[in-house]
Image (cartoon, rainbow, N blue to C red; front, side):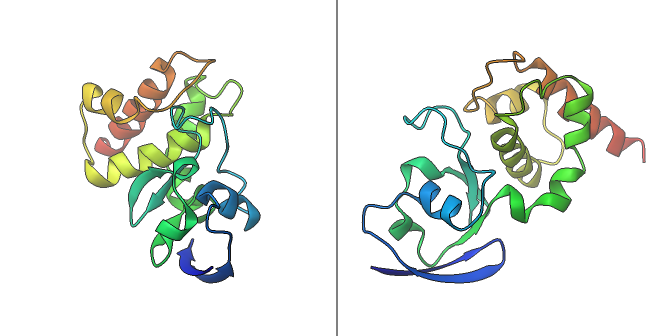
Length: 152
């Protein structure tokens, strides 16, 4: 089956199997930040933005993404670079495996709510699994980033 979508600003047309998952399509097209973690749509590692909304690419067929705009971390490097250092400064990237999912969801959160409370941050990031850091480092990093923007 033929599909067409926009991936990180580039139009892509491809012939796919009807049962191909979006995560496999994205990795086939060089988007290696999109990771497979739990195989059950519970960890958030495969988060991408479809039409600027976060989705789990491991539970969506590519056919459903046809005609849509998909962004991965590869396409959002400039936006992500604004705050990832703040997360790293808090020791929240011990192994780094969960970082792309956290970064994608943080971008979506900050686009939707540029000044979230700590509870709103926790709620938005609740779908991301991190086995190393306990989540408080990510929260502190995002809060430090937001506070730094207020001081500019």
